[in-house]
Length: 191
Length: 191
DNA sequence: TCCTTTTGTCAACGATTGTTGACTAATTAA
DNA sequence: TTAATTAGTCAACAATCGTTGACAAAAGGA
Image (cartoon, each protein chain N blue to C red):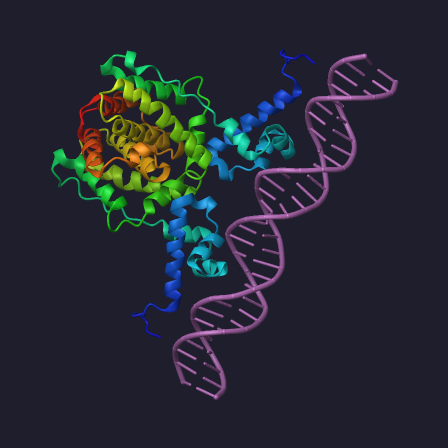
């Protein structure tokens, strides 16, 4: 068998099918309500294969929920455009072409799954906070990061998990303008 | 037996114990992970009694998650203080003396429990939106309500469910000032 | 006291869960 | 073709879930 150039073997295709089914279900109903049998049914394979290829439901979830913030370097952006830049970045991450839906997966399961909750914590404490610390004023980085996180996660929670009609109805332009303004104030304004 | 003046009979005390245990567990780990047997263990009674007194786990959850927004009449408040007024109101509802923890219960279970999700939707679409429509400008009430909801729910989600350290660390004064400012702009600012 | 109602105990049910291991079928290397 | 590796199938496991019904204990009224 080829060592590096695998020609998308049969096993790889079922692996991909399982992962896709898992992401769809995890995003739609969370970790607890998603069963291995449901995943297998959607992927049209045997439930035992889910375990064989991913070890356990937990490991499959971990694989399905990976995502990379890829935060832009805020210290190089125009200081007056940090807010809009951040909001644009998150929106394209959540709704853009390469969106993989990992954010809804994490958000929906974070309330009852410790793995998901910790992943979210790591992201916002380990990436958003440092980025704001570099970009914003010298003090109160933790406060600013907390406020920014509450607004961004709240937007995602209402729009993708709860699907609150007034939030789903917001246009991207409105979000960029209004939420961008808020983030801008949190990130750089005086406290 | 007395018809109206029940002297806190034995049954009432166990009913209360069950409800208290249920609220504690529902708030801490959500609907799915909370088992009838866990509730019974904390209430120190038999699991069968949980069903006998509340019919089913679903009905018990509905009882444990009732709460009343009791929104103040924003049209009578100083227009320039709507933001702070709203944030103060929610904070005292969530952390004040009479806080019953129903908000964390709803938020934590909303991601995987339709009953909880619908209850949250009803609250914010049926109470917050009308209140803002009365108080704010004549147009764009839905947009304003969506933005306000995203910030308020995001704050609660980060602070009580996810327990993001930077958000937990925010003082009430900071929240009232900063989030109040944001809500004020969403509620009354031009869009 | 006796009788009725209330309150609590216990064991078990059927369903569903993640996971396993033995087995067959298909694919590949020789 | 033959042998070996890989992929997929199937039935079953142990555990846990919400829920039920039969029964015992306690309390209250007569």
